[in-house]
Image (cartoon, rainbow, N blue to C red; front, side, top):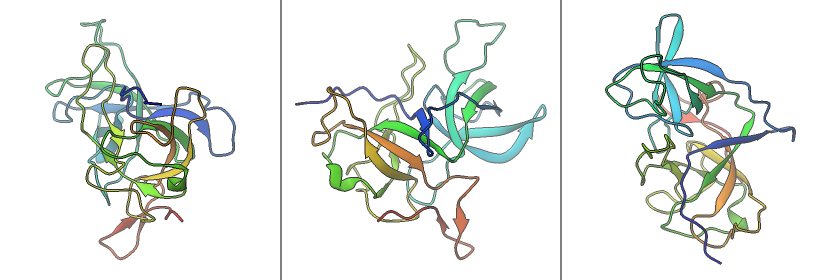
Length: 203
């Protein structure tokens, strides 16, 4: 069976303890240099703040690049109530799921098919698709072999903890949907030798 190629970034679905995601987020500021940002985009705190809120930018794909959380909604703009995302030349506010114990659903990319043997490995995000500006939805996926295949590597950004159990999801085909934990999390990552950032290493 083939899977639909419908990237959506990362979608919070449950907590590590098995309880459903409770919807709690934290408000962050986005400045005009952050790049196009929409729902499902992974972001990283840039170490600055604005108007009393910490600032985030789009997280960089690849090993050793931290992720602070995932955008779940864009704050309404009184001057543009139809605004579904924040364009790269704009500023605004977003609500971010930044709990390091939240499990996310993400689509694997189209380059390689994985299998249940990939559960327990680490992976990185990949930006093959652009943000869907019609609906404000992220195009980020999990790299299943485009440039960095999943491996037991603590410098990778994600930890694959399961496959999404749905009839329309074939874990042996490309674009399968997986359950992941943000391993290289800003609020949990470990600086192992003052140069290398590592999170939970897969097995």
